[in-house]
Length: 298
Image (cartoon, rainbow, N blue to C red; front, side):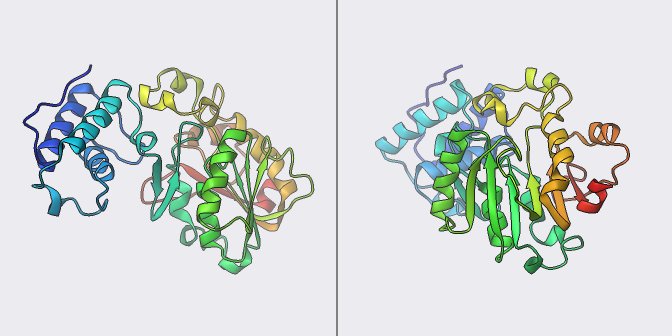
């Protein structure tokens, strides 16, 4: 459905109200940085007008120029007609305080693991100085590797992805944060090209969407690379590989942290002998598991 913006929309407040109504009318799906029509409309307005993203109220009654109105109309038309996620329209996504460049070559960052670093791992990784080497499997745009580098200041980090396109985006983000000396980007199918590497901490937000769920994805999610989402029939294709191989790549007291979305039941049914620790985050109760190397090796 394409809806032209009325000429009487003059202020930012007018455009915000209109956008929220049109987003609801079009039944847009959110989840790529915002969870509702109001927050997404506000974000797109502020970004497009080059205003601070945390200061909407002072500008609500400001009148827009003709050029600004034209740019907003085109932006909202793409969001509604093409169902493109906001992050791809603006070229940026956020994990907490960290901003990353994104485009359709990479999954839009939304990992629960970022909420755990480093405080959420403190009972299992007793001191940030204990992490001298870390691995981010399925790094995508490099977001978790960059969060790792800020959480564990003494760590050298390998960031792995099978997609060469994703690693190109990751390289840009790593450079933007000045971390090229600490984050090593490697093209690899999980551990295949890591040879004799050993790590104190391995994290991964792998593809884990089941085949049934992939077939039912809303249009917004079809703009993302399917290889970053599809986890096979039960969503555990990559998880199996990680659990089978991780012991060989962890140091004796090493820790593995993996995100599986809604896959807890499938994980526990498939690996009934493993003593999974499920880590609660502010946004999820049972989407991330932790295992120590001795648990995996046993």
